[in-house]
Length: 299
Image (cartoon, rainbow, N blue to C red):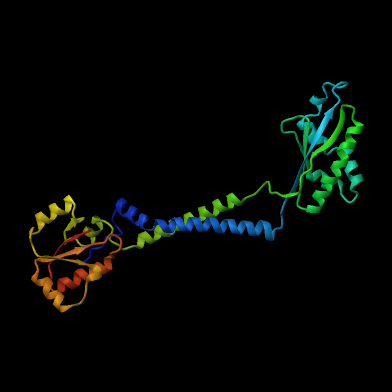
């Protein structure tokens, strides 16, 4: 019968690894499920409940400078200055004149400028959550920028070069973050659950588990290994009549008990992790009552 000492024994790394490996699929499944759930929740919240869909139009304009009279004009109208010029009064007021339904605040909050490489190509970016407003501001700048060139001596002309369509855009998308957070939560919860389950798991995983619970029955080792052959040769008769018995094969059968009593002994077959202390305890106790000799256990 068992001599349980799980509450006082030190950590058995081999037992821990076998327990962890047995339930690794649960951790993987929980992590994937958490990532999917986190992503779905974020998408529902950001695109359905909060209604914060962002729209954007990126139009490119070709700038022709008056190099003959102002050779240094390019140095003044650089990427940094254009971002501010696009929101200055001359251009903004012209845009308001073209689209009187807009407000100055809407334009200032929506428009930015970029010069990514060629100083002659100005990219005007209009961004916002109101699709109609974004389109109106973009259309207004198609007239406001050429009009601005007419009042600035350093610039000959500004013409639309690439007239883009409106697109759905979110510069601060959190889908990867949401998936990562959901997966991390699923990982931590599953790890905690697996560890807690392992603490209360009375499965027999290692030789140490067996010796602690059944010290009177020698552990022979894994079948067909040097350890098993040496232990069997030392502890048992090499050609003895031994009956091998697994826990799920155990039956309350009088004829079977008679057959086991007539044999030289019974070798229990242990399935690490699947055999529980309580189940194996019942087998060992019953065989002892039936005067059946248990000579060892093997994996």
